[in-house]
Image (cartoon, rainbow, N blue to C red; front, side):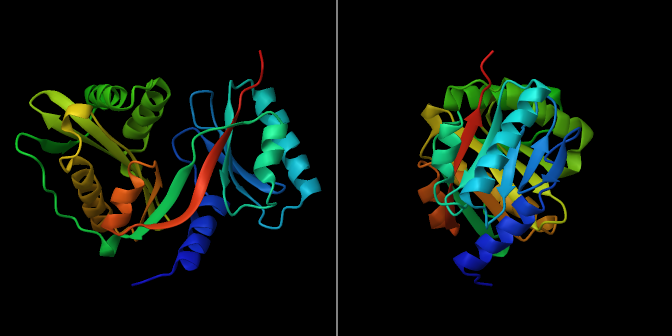
Amino acid sequence: MNLDRDTLLTLFDREMREHARPDGPGVRVERTGDVVRQVGAAGDWNGVVWSAPDLDAVRADAAIAAQVAHYTALGHDEFEWKLYAHDRPADLAERLLTAGFEAEEPETLLVAPVAGLSTAVELPEGVRLRTVSDADDVELMARAHERAFGSDWSRLRHQVLARLTEDPDSFVGVLAMVGDEPVSSARMELYPGTGFAGLWGGGTVEAWRGRGIYRSLVAFRARIAAERGYGYLQVDASDQSSPILQRLGFLALSTTIPHVYRPSH
């Protein structure tokens, strides 16, 4: 099945954004005016996932102000407006910046039909993959992530533990192990009813990069997605992983630039 870029993007916008499902226990998705947003506790991901495609300047400014007021009133230390390059109006990014948002690094939205992806896992000698099953494994994921990316995993630790303990059917965590040491970790979030599963993470510690672990993590998760009946995999890819994923069969649909609002205290 060879769906074109526009068809896939339309499907993604409808299933994963306009009709978004909560991404974990204890959070809710709300349609309010011209936006769809997720609202949870301070440790959850909070933010706008969709805005109306016919949004004009006046309605955009009103929607931005309303979300700032809403999340600020909740007392969270930050929330995100997940902006995509094809969102309207064309100057929505500038309007967010004017309202006090900060732009993060852009990522490429990639989607692939699961049926077209390789599920062959080819690992370097001494490396094995296994799924995450308990809180100790989550700590190993955190260790691999922090060594690979050099960034704090505390917020993600909370979210991953919640998924694993309260909604395990919507989450798959994977560890690449050398002996007792994690050298890479990745996760897959399943969105029942959408046909989509999302690939996240995939950072490998420096000494083990360039040896096929990332590709194997993709193939391993693609196999599980296929077994569970999901039709598409979606990735918000960095500049490092985007070329690899496109060689594996993913199609670049758009660019996403998270815009984060942090109320001044």
